Image 1 (spheres, rainbow, N blue to C red):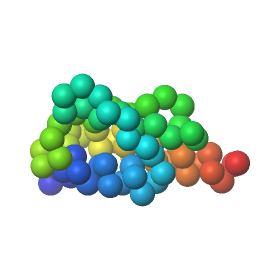
Image 2 (image 1 turned 90 degrees about the vertical axis):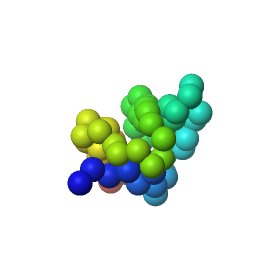
Image 3 (image 1 turned 135 degrees about the vertical axis):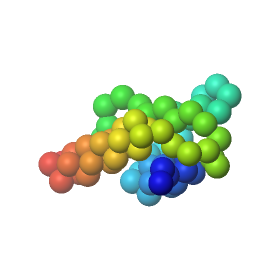
Image 4 (image 1 turned 180 degrees about the vertical axis):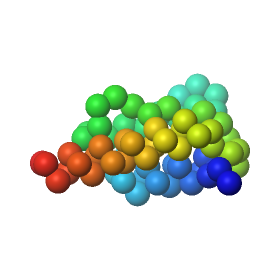
Length: 70
């Protein structure tokens, strides 16, 4: 069962990402230890797409690696 968009946002917040508003239902997420940004599209109650879940997980892992190297 796919996660909801709100769950992905909670995961990003917990990892230290900061939300930057986008257009419409899009939100951008940035972190000082992550190169680039993550864009999530969709309302909070919508099911997340598989690529969105994968992108969020990879970003969180990259931040954790950079914190250890840091």
